Length: 331
Ligand code: ADP
Ligand code: TRP
Image (cartoon, rainbow, N blue to C red):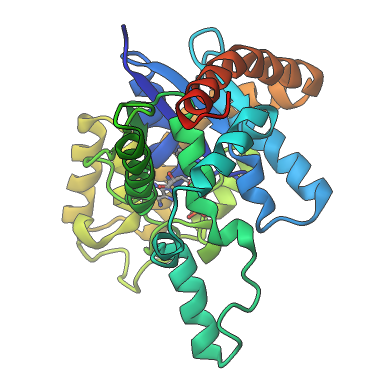
């Protein structure tokens, strides 16, 4: 039997090329080798997104983004978290085995507390129980599908370790393997994709290159990349330049050597380097954008794909819940 790969993306904003290279592309590569289950973590997004129209459209955007990036719904079970009520039943069961202390140690919660303390606010100001118990819902997402590997970025590893802790304490309590223990799969070679200002590309820094923006917007965004004040004539260093780091993601070795040569030789301004970057980025993104636009112009078909995915996913989820209930004496 093939092993199972599972991951989710929280629909909290527009997808950018950091999401694509750091999360979507590696997950789709794993789908060749594993039985893949990929989903939209919409209840996770509810913790921060309280505007219904915005949340609704971001859910469709992320779903269309997965498909436009090449997810084949015949091959991958593709669904919305909110369509699998068993996940929330399992969450309640996991809660009984999750110490409050474990949640106190979660990075996201600790960061929120630290921010409040710095501002002199009440320690728990603005922190809802969804944020506090976030790792339990995520553990349920993972455990319910008997996942073996979870492709995620470095920032999510602590959550997977918590899912392992919770599942292990359940197995220890019942003296048998009721739940499978998952492990994180972090792609070491996917360095952090830099944003326009050279920091990690992230929607919270406002420095992103959107994945599905119209061509004109894409070009304008690339032209906004922050550079130093070197003149056209000066030779330039590929190592300290986010234009070149981004170029590497979209080009072959020959193109990279050619651009590196022009950097070394001098005589090429930043504007020209950005034009060359735009050319290769657009070459890669144009067909994806076309697929994205087509998918977004037919929301009923998109909804149908997600519903069909949920139909395939629910019996698997129900079997895990039934197994746990039996072990727990609630059958
Ligand atoms: P953001 O930082 O923009 O809020 P998310 O936290 O929603 O992005 O990330 C969703 C997924 O994309 C995660 O798996 C994360 O590791 C990955 N990711 C986000 N930004 C980058 C980046 N700049 N480089 C590589 N991977 C990224
Ligand atoms: N917490 C993840 C993120 O912020 C999203 C997510 C929710 C997830 N449930 C998951 C990822 C289960 C992997 C497995 O990016």
